[in-house]
Length: 419
Ligand code: UD1
Image (cartoon, rainbow, N blue to C red):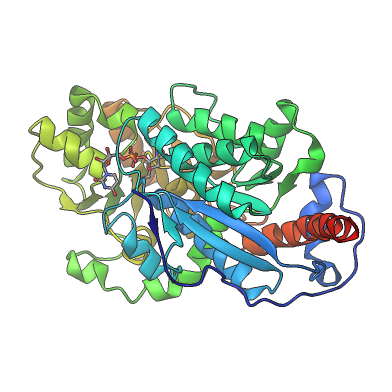
């Protein structure tokens, strides 16, 4: 039910540090730069206890660089909690291995279930843990059920919450992730935005600007770190592919895979595309289940199990075209400069369209196929990468936290010592 790891929970050595305390920037516009000034580092006098939550595949990719950066700094002591939302080796353990993440201190083992079951499961089990540990801050990433559930628990216990990837909005309340984003943001104390639209949305929702920090994209931190290593995976040879001569497809959104007819028509469209070039389709467990239940077998495409991070990164880097309904893949292809067609009606990541290689193509299979063939004939222009998608987003986040929470923790400890 709730598994604890016996190894030490600290990722950083215990060492109190003393430095200075300047005023915090009052606006998101200059926050990231201000906190990156070397003189603003190492202000905490006591360790800042940080509990970080991961639950599903994209969380691991986003949290890995944050954990690594925290481990480099003497100011932080981290406790890693895995909710167990994703649990199979290829959706979870493989990512911990490849990204060099420490084993979780606790696994809540909530597993699969309805949204309510997953959310309630995390809340009940995490409440005990947070009550025991009382960290200085809970840090969550992204928009999965585990993210929202954990943020709610901490907020109700009076533990400050930091949300990484705050402010993204699809404005489509039918998406479970949109509810998760809205709820998480409203209870968060530190809102770290990956792109300017996040800041605009949060301000429009009445979040005070002092809580908002434009820091860039932690997923790109991971991509930049592992891109060279990924080149040695040999995945192209293993699948019999030549660079820039194949397409990659992924599908897992309930709106695309839960309706049998729609899923069948999307698979037909991909099969059609595979007459033009090989199409590799790593199948998400949700999609695999739906295909099995509907008796949909596949011929023509290259179907694989979900791939590990390095193999998938290599596969997308060398693709001529990517078709997806994922959020993170829209961002990764923007930096990899690989044309991406997003099979959705909306995106919460508009910068990938304005400045990246992404194009929203809707969910009509005929339109998607037409867009794919058009893109093969006329690939998009490449622009400069979005601001702060430079491999340093995690450092910006920890600069803000070290500065702000370090000061708060020190003040409250001084008060309690005086008492
Ligand atoms: C979740 C997130 C989504 C994210 C996606 C990435 C929510 C609401 N959705 O969707 O935002 O983009 O993860 O993958 O949190 N399963 C396995 N093995 C696993 C995990 C899941 O077989 O390791 C199966 C289960 O049968 C489960 C189904 O996949 O019922 C769906 O998993 P679930 O956690 O409900 O959400 P995802 O569709 O993966």
